Image (cartoon, rainbow, N blue to C red; front, side, top):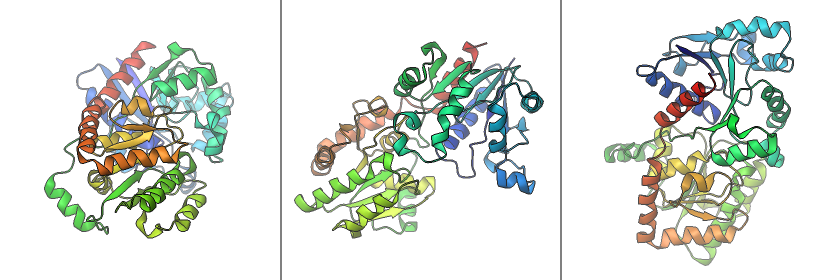
Length: 386
Protein backbone atom coordinates (compact mmCIF):
# COMPACT_ATOMS: atom_id res chain seq x y z
CA UNK A 1 0.00 0.00 0.00
CA UNK A 2 1.24 3.47 -0.92
CA UNK A 3 2.04 5.50 2.20
CA UNK A 4 2.12 9.29 1.98
CA UNK A 5 2.89 11.85 4.67
CA UNK A 6 1.93 15.48 3.96
CA UNK A 7 3.48 18.40 5.81
CA UNK A 8 0.49 20.29 7.24
CA UNK A 9 2.55 22.92 9.07
CA UNK A 10 1.10 25.82 6.98
CA UNK A 11 -2.43 25.02 8.22
CA UNK A 12 -3.51 27.72 10.69
CA UNK A 13 -6.71 27.98 12.76
CA UNK A 14 -8.11 30.21 10.00
CA UNK A 15 -6.28 28.89 6.92
CA UNK A 16 -5.47 31.20 4.04
CA UNK A 17 -2.99 31.06 1.17
CA UNK A 18 -0.83 27.95 1.35
CA UNK A 19 -2.62 26.77 4.49
CA UNK A 20 -5.95 26.89 2.64
CA UNK A 21 -4.56 24.69 -0.14
CA UNK A 22 -3.02 22.20 2.27
CA UNK A 23 -6.14 21.90 4.44
CA UNK A 24 -8.40 21.28 1.42
CA UNK A 25 -5.97 18.85 -0.23
CA UNK A 26 -5.75 16.80 2.97
CA UNK A 27 -9.55 16.67 3.30
CA UNK A 28 -10.02 15.64 -0.33
CA UNK A 29 -7.29 12.97 -0.13
CA UNK A 30 -8.82 11.68 3.10
CA UNK A 31 -12.11 11.11 1.26
CA UNK A 32 -10.31 9.23 -1.53
CA UNK A 33 -8.80 6.66 0.84
CA UNK A 34 -12.07 4.71 0.87
CA UNK A 35 -11.79 3.97 -2.84
CA UNK A 36 -8.03 4.11 -3.50
CA UNK A 37 -5.38 1.90 -2.01
CA UNK A 38 -3.17 4.35 -0.11
CA UNK A 39 -2.58 5.56 3.43
CA UNK A 40 -2.43 9.24 4.30
CA UNK A 41 -0.41 10.60 7.20
CA UNK A 42 -0.04 14.18 8.36
CA UNK A 43 3.10 15.76 9.81
CA UNK A 44 2.98 19.01 11.72
CA UNK A 45 5.61 21.33 13.17
CA UNK A 46 4.79 23.75 16.00
CA UNK A 47 5.59 27.44 15.59
CA UNK A 48 8.62 28.71 17.48
CA UNK A 49 6.59 30.50 20.18
CA UNK A 50 4.38 27.46 20.78
CA UNK A 51 7.43 25.20 20.79
CA UNK A 52 9.14 27.34 23.42
CA UNK A 53 5.99 27.12 25.56
CA UNK A 54 5.87 23.36 25.12
CA UNK A 55 2.55 23.63 23.27
CA UNK A 56 2.80 21.06 20.51
CA UNK A 57 -0.92 20.74 19.84
CA UNK A 58 -2.38 20.33 16.37
CA UNK A 59 -4.79 22.93 14.87
CA UNK A 60 -8.43 22.04 15.46
CA UNK A 61 -9.09 21.53 11.75
CA UNK A 62 -6.53 18.69 11.70
CA UNK A 63 -7.69 16.93 14.86
CA UNK A 64 -10.29 14.81 13.03
CA UNK A 65 -7.64 13.17 10.85
CA UNK A 66 -6.09 9.89 12.03
CA UNK A 67 -2.38 9.19 11.69
CA UNK A 68 -1.10 12.58 12.88
CA UNK A 69 2.65 12.88 13.32
CA UNK A 70 4.39 15.60 15.30
CA UNK A 71 7.74 16.80 14.01
CA UNK A 72 9.08 18.14 17.32
CA UNK A 73 11.07 21.03 15.94
CA UNK A 74 9.93 24.47 14.70
CA UNK A 75 10.39 25.37 11.04
CA UNK A 76 13.11 27.88 11.87
CA UNK A 77 15.30 25.08 13.24
CA UNK A 78 14.43 22.42 10.67
CA UNK A 79 15.50 24.82 7.91
CA UNK A 80 18.99 24.58 9.38
CA UNK A 81 18.86 20.81 8.95
CA UNK A 82 17.65 21.18 5.37
CA UNK A 83 20.72 23.29 4.59
CA UNK A 84 22.86 20.19 5.25
CA UNK A 85 21.06 17.00 4.28
CA UNK A 86 23.88 14.71 5.46
CA UNK A 87 23.76 16.09 8.97
CA UNK A 88 23.33 13.16 11.43
CA UNK A 89 20.49 15.10 13.04
CA UNK A 90 18.65 14.97 9.72
CA UNK A 91 18.67 11.18 9.84
CA UNK A 92 17.50 11.25 13.44
CA UNK A 93 14.51 13.51 12.82
CA UNK A 94 13.50 11.62 9.67
CA UNK A 95 11.99 8.95 11.90
CA UNK A 96 9.18 11.32 12.91
CA UNK A 97 7.73 11.02 9.39
CA UNK A 98 7.45 7.24 9.88
CA UNK A 99 9.49 6.31 6.78
CA UNK A 100 6.58 6.52 4.27
CA UNK A 101 6.94 5.96 0.53
CA UNK A 102 6.43 9.67 -0.08
CA UNK A 103 7.02 12.79 1.99
CA UNK A 104 5.19 15.82 0.60
CA UNK A 105 6.59 19.24 1.53
CA UNK A 106 3.88 21.83 0.97
CA UNK A 107 5.59 25.20 1.43
CA UNK A 108 8.57 25.68 -0.90
CA UNK A 109 10.67 23.01 0.82
CA UNK A 110 10.74 19.31 1.59
CA UNK A 111 12.69 17.54 4.30
CA UNK A 112 15.60 15.44 2.91
CA UNK A 113 14.26 12.06 4.02
CA UNK A 114 16.67 9.38 2.78
CA UNK A 115 14.17 6.51 2.84
CA UNK A 116 11.26 8.28 1.10
CA UNK A 117 10.53 9.88 -2.24
CA UNK A 118 10.28 13.67 -1.92
CA UNK A 119 7.54 15.87 -3.40
CA UNK A 120 7.63 19.67 -3.06
CA UNK A 121 5.04 22.37 -3.80
CA UNK A 122 6.18 25.53 -5.59
CA UNK A 123 3.15 27.76 -6.08
CA UNK A 124 4.72 30.66 -7.93
CA UNK A 125 8.10 32.32 -8.42
CA UNK A 126 7.28 35.86 -7.31
CA UNK A 127 10.45 35.88 -5.21
CA UNK A 128 12.56 35.38 -8.36
CA UNK A 129 10.56 37.19 -11.06
CA UNK A 130 9.27 40.13 -9.01
CA UNK A 131 11.42 40.51 -5.86
CA UNK A 132 10.08 44.06 -5.45
CA UNK A 133 6.72 42.50 -4.53
CA UNK A 134 8.06 40.26 -1.74
CA UNK A 135 8.82 40.71 1.94
CA UNK A 136 11.98 39.80 3.84
CA UNK A 137 10.80 36.25 4.58
CA UNK A 138 9.94 35.41 0.97
CA UNK A 139 13.23 36.90 -0.23
CA UNK A 140 15.01 33.96 1.42
CA UNK A 141 13.09 31.35 -0.59
CA UNK A 142 15.44 31.16 -3.59
CA UNK A 143 18.36 29.58 -1.77
CA UNK A 144 16.10 27.19 0.16
CA UNK A 145 14.22 26.09 -2.97
CA UNK A 146 17.42 25.45 -4.95
CA UNK A 147 18.79 23.43 -2.05
CA UNK A 148 15.66 21.28 -1.83
CA UNK A 149 15.56 20.72 -5.59
CA UNK A 150 18.77 18.71 -5.23
CA UNK A 151 16.83 15.89 -3.55
CA UNK A 152 13.26 16.54 -4.75
CA UNK A 153 11.80 13.78 -6.94
CA UNK A 154 8.71 15.70 -8.07
CA UNK A 155 7.53 19.33 -8.02
CA UNK A 156 3.83 20.12 -7.78
CA UNK A 157 2.54 23.51 -8.87
CA UNK A 158 -0.86 25.07 -9.43
CA UNK A 159 -0.89 26.32 -13.04
CA UNK A 160 0.79 25.80 -16.39
CA UNK A 161 2.09 29.35 -16.10
CA UNK A 162 3.92 28.53 -12.87
CA UNK A 163 5.19 25.29 -14.39
CA UNK A 164 6.84 27.20 -17.21
CA UNK A 165 8.39 29.64 -14.73
CA UNK A 166 9.81 26.74 -12.70
CA UNK A 167 11.28 25.16 -15.83
CA UNK A 168 12.71 28.44 -17.14
CA UNK A 169 13.98 30.07 -13.95
CA UNK A 170 15.05 27.01 -11.93
CA UNK A 171 16.06 24.73 -14.83
CA UNK A 172 13.89 21.87 -13.59
CA UNK A 173 13.19 19.06 -16.05
CA UNK A 174 9.62 19.51 -17.29
CA UNK A 175 8.93 15.81 -16.61
CA UNK A 176 9.50 16.49 -12.91
CA UNK A 177 6.85 19.26 -12.72
CA UNK A 178 3.15 18.39 -12.46
CA UNK A 179 0.23 20.83 -12.38
CA UNK A 180 -2.56 20.20 -9.86
CA UNK A 181 -4.92 23.23 -9.99
CA UNK A 182 -6.65 24.77 -7.00
CA UNK A 183 -10.39 24.87 -6.37
CA UNK A 184 -12.80 27.30 -4.75
CA UNK A 185 -13.88 27.12 -1.12
CA UNK A 186 -17.40 27.71 -2.45
CA UNK A 187 -19.83 25.97 -4.80
CA UNK A 188 -22.39 27.69 -7.02
CA UNK A 189 -25.25 27.13 -4.56
CA UNK A 190 -23.21 28.00 -1.48
CA UNK A 191 -25.61 30.71 -0.30
CA UNK A 192 -29.39 30.20 -0.24
CA UNK A 193 -31.66 33.22 -0.63
CA UNK A 194 -32.62 32.97 3.02
CA UNK A 195 -29.01 32.86 4.14
CA UNK A 196 -28.16 35.89 1.98
CA UNK A 197 -30.92 37.86 3.67
CA UNK A 198 -29.80 36.74 7.13
CA UNK A 199 -26.13 37.56 6.54
CA UNK A 200 -26.97 40.93 5.01
CA UNK A 201 -28.48 41.97 8.33
CA UNK A 202 -25.33 40.92 10.20
CA UNK A 203 -22.88 42.92 8.09
CA UNK A 204 -22.37 46.61 8.69
CA UNK A 205 -22.63 47.66 5.07
CA UNK A 206 -25.41 49.31 3.07
CA UNK A 207 -26.01 46.83 0.26
CA UNK A 208 -28.49 49.20 -1.38
CA UNK A 209 -25.42 51.00 -2.80
CA UNK A 210 -23.86 49.05 -5.71
CA UNK A 211 -20.17 48.30 -5.43
CA UNK A 212 -17.05 46.96 -7.11
CA UNK A 213 -15.19 44.30 -5.14
CA UNK A 214 -11.57 43.29 -4.55
CA UNK A 215 -10.66 40.33 -2.31
CA UNK A 216 -7.08 39.45 -1.38
CA UNK A 217 -4.12 40.54 0.73
CA UNK A 218 -3.47 44.28 0.60
CA UNK A 219 -0.02 44.39 -0.98
CA UNK A 220 1.73 45.93 -4.04
CA UNK A 221 1.64 42.81 -6.23
CA UNK A 222 -2.15 42.98 -6.32
CA UNK A 223 -2.00 46.34 -8.14
CA UNK A 224 -4.67 47.91 -5.94
CA UNK A 225 -3.55 51.45 -6.72
CA UNK A 226 -4.63 50.82 -10.33
CA UNK A 227 -8.08 49.89 -9.03
CA UNK A 228 -8.23 53.16 -7.08
CA UNK A 229 -7.13 55.14 -10.16
CA UNK A 230 -9.78 53.45 -12.31
CA UNK A 231 -12.41 54.02 -9.63
CA UNK A 232 -11.53 57.73 -9.36
CA UNK A 233 -11.85 58.07 -13.13
CA UNK A 234 -15.21 56.31 -13.27
CA UNK A 235 -16.62 58.41 -10.43
CA UNK A 236 -15.44 61.66 -12.02
CA UNK A 237 -16.08 61.08 -15.71
CA UNK A 238 -18.99 58.64 -15.70
CA UNK A 239 -20.62 59.41 -12.35
CA UNK A 240 -21.04 55.72 -11.49
CA UNK A 241 -23.01 55.31 -8.25
CA UNK A 242 -20.77 52.55 -6.97
CA UNK A 243 -18.61 52.14 -3.91
CA UNK A 244 -15.33 50.22 -3.92
CA UNK A 245 -15.08 47.45 -1.32
CA UNK A 246 -11.72 45.84 -0.54
CA UNK A 247 -11.65 42.73 1.66
CA UNK A 248 -8.31 41.44 2.90
CA UNK A 249 -5.68 41.64 5.57
CA UNK A 250 -2.84 44.11 5.30
CA UNK A 251 0.25 42.45 3.85
CA UNK A 252 3.52 44.25 3.28
CA UNK A 253 4.22 47.71 1.82
CA UNK A 254 0.53 48.52 2.11
CA UNK A 255 1.07 52.12 3.23
CA UNK A 256 1.11 53.67 -0.30
CA UNK A 257 -2.18 51.94 -1.03
CA UNK A 258 -3.94 53.55 1.92
CA UNK A 259 -2.24 56.85 1.09
CA UNK A 260 -3.83 56.65 -2.37
CA UNK A 261 -7.21 56.06 -0.75
CA UNK A 262 -6.76 59.10 1.48
CA UNK A 263 -5.93 61.26 -1.55
CA UNK A 264 -8.99 60.10 -3.46
CA UNK A 265 -11.82 62.66 -3.75
CA UNK A 266 -14.12 59.66 -3.24
CA UNK A 267 -12.36 58.18 -0.24
CA UNK A 268 -15.67 58.01 1.61
CA UNK A 269 -16.85 55.60 -1.09
CA UNK A 270 -13.88 53.27 -0.59
CA UNK A 271 -14.29 50.69 2.19
CA UNK A 272 -11.60 48.37 3.50
CA UNK A 273 -12.80 45.36 5.47
CA UNK A 274 -10.30 43.14 7.26
CA UNK A 275 -10.78 39.43 7.91
CA UNK A 276 -14.33 38.14 7.38
CA UNK A 277 -15.80 34.65 7.70
CA UNK A 278 -16.09 32.59 4.52
CA UNK A 279 -19.85 33.12 4.48
CA UNK A 280 -19.56 36.90 4.73
CA UNK A 281 -16.93 37.04 2.00
CA UNK A 282 -19.26 34.93 -0.15
CA UNK A 283 -22.04 37.43 0.52
CA UNK A 284 -19.91 40.30 -0.77
CA UNK A 285 -18.93 38.28 -3.85
CA UNK A 286 -22.55 37.42 -4.60
CA UNK A 287 -23.84 40.99 -4.33
CA UNK A 288 -21.02 42.79 -6.19
CA UNK A 289 -21.61 44.28 -9.63
CA UNK A 290 -18.06 43.37 -10.66
CA UNK A 291 -14.98 41.73 -9.20
CA UNK A 292 -11.73 43.53 -10.08
CA UNK A 293 -8.36 41.78 -9.83
CA UNK A 294 -5.66 43.47 -11.94
CA UNK A 295 -2.76 41.63 -10.26
CA UNK A 296 0.75 41.91 -11.65
CA UNK A 297 1.46 38.20 -11.17
CA UNK A 298 -0.35 35.13 -9.81
CA UNK A 299 0.47 31.47 -9.40
CA UNK A 300 -3.25 30.76 -9.78
CA UNK A 301 -5.49 33.67 -8.76
CA UNK A 302 -7.99 31.87 -6.54
CA UNK A 303 -10.20 34.95 -5.89
CA UNK A 304 -11.00 35.04 -9.62
CA UNK A 305 -12.31 31.47 -9.44
CA UNK A 306 -14.27 32.20 -6.27
CA UNK A 307 -15.94 35.23 -7.84
CA UNK A 308 -16.94 33.24 -10.92
CA UNK A 309 -18.26 30.40 -8.76
CA UNK A 310 -20.60 32.78 -6.93
CA UNK A 311 -21.85 34.52 -10.05
CA UNK A 312 -19.79 37.71 -10.03
CA UNK A 313 -18.50 38.97 -13.40
CA UNK A 314 -14.71 39.37 -13.36
CA UNK A 315 -12.18 41.85 -14.71
CA UNK A 316 -8.64 40.57 -14.32
CA UNK A 317 -5.15 40.73 -15.80
CA UNK A 318 -4.02 39.17 -19.06
CA UNK A 319 -0.78 37.89 -17.51
CA UNK A 320 0.68 34.87 -15.67
CA UNK A 321 -1.92 32.23 -14.71
CA UNK A 322 -4.99 34.46 -14.77
CA UNK A 323 -6.09 33.83 -18.39
CA UNK A 324 -5.58 30.12 -17.73
CA UNK A 325 -7.99 30.18 -14.80
CA UNK A 326 -10.52 32.61 -16.28
CA UNK A 327 -10.62 31.28 -19.85
CA UNK A 328 -13.15 33.29 -21.86
CA UNK A 329 -15.29 33.84 -18.75
CA UNK A 330 -13.68 37.15 -17.68
CA UNK A 331 -12.65 40.46 -19.20
CA UNK A 332 -8.85 40.49 -19.49
CA UNK A 333 -6.90 43.75 -19.32
CA UNK A 334 -3.30 44.96 -19.22
CA UNK A 335 -2.63 45.57 -15.51
CA UNK A 336 -0.31 48.45 -16.36
CA UNK A 337 -3.15 50.34 -18.08
CA UNK A 338 -5.70 51.65 -15.53
CA UNK A 339 -7.83 53.01 -18.37
CA UNK A 340 -8.32 49.49 -19.74
CA UNK A 341 -9.46 48.45 -16.29
CA UNK A 342 -11.87 51.38 -16.09
CA UNK A 343 -13.34 50.70 -19.52
CA UNK A 344 -13.88 47.00 -18.75
CA UNK A 345 -15.62 47.83 -15.47
CA UNK A 346 -17.82 50.37 -17.24
CA UNK A 347 -18.96 47.76 -19.77
CA UNK A 348 -20.08 45.47 -16.98
CA UNK A 349 -21.89 48.02 -14.83
CA UNK A 350 -23.60 49.82 -17.75
CA UNK A 351 -24.85 46.82 -19.75
CA UNK A 352 -26.90 44.32 -17.75
CA UNK A 353 -27.16 41.86 -20.62
CA UNK A 354 -23.38 41.94 -21.17
CA UNK A 355 -22.88 41.52 -17.43
CA UNK A 356 -25.24 38.54 -17.24
CA UNK A 357 -23.39 36.87 -20.08
CA UNK A 358 -20.20 36.87 -17.98
CA UNK A 359 -22.08 35.75 -14.88
CA UNK A 360 -23.16 32.59 -16.74
CA UNK A 361 -19.78 32.05 -18.38
CA UNK A 362 -18.07 32.33 -15.01
CA UNK A 363 -20.33 29.76 -13.35
CA UNK A 364 -19.74 27.27 -16.16
CA UNK A 365 -15.99 27.84 -16.11
CA UNK A 366 -15.83 27.33 -12.35
CA UNK A 367 -17.34 23.84 -12.65
CA UNK A 368 -14.13 22.39 -14.10
CA UNK A 369 -12.25 23.03 -10.83
CA UNK A 370 -12.84 20.90 -7.72
CA UNK A 371 -10.83 19.65 -4.75
CA UNK A 372 -11.70 16.10 -5.76
CA UNK A 373 -9.98 16.72 -9.09
CA UNK A 374 -6.98 18.27 -7.30
CA UNK A 375 -6.69 15.27 -4.96
CA UNK A 376 -7.00 12.70 -7.75
CA UNK A 377 -4.34 14.42 -9.85
CA UNK A 378 -2.08 14.71 -6.81
CA UNK A 379 -2.47 10.99 -6.06
CA UNK A 380 -1.70 10.20 -9.70
CA UNK A 381 1.44 12.35 -9.43
CA UNK A 382 2.54 10.48 -6.29
CA UNK A 383 2.18 7.15 -8.06
CA UNK A 384 4.13 8.37 -11.09
CA UNK A 385 7.37 8.39 -9.06
CA UNK A 386 6.97 5.01 -7.37
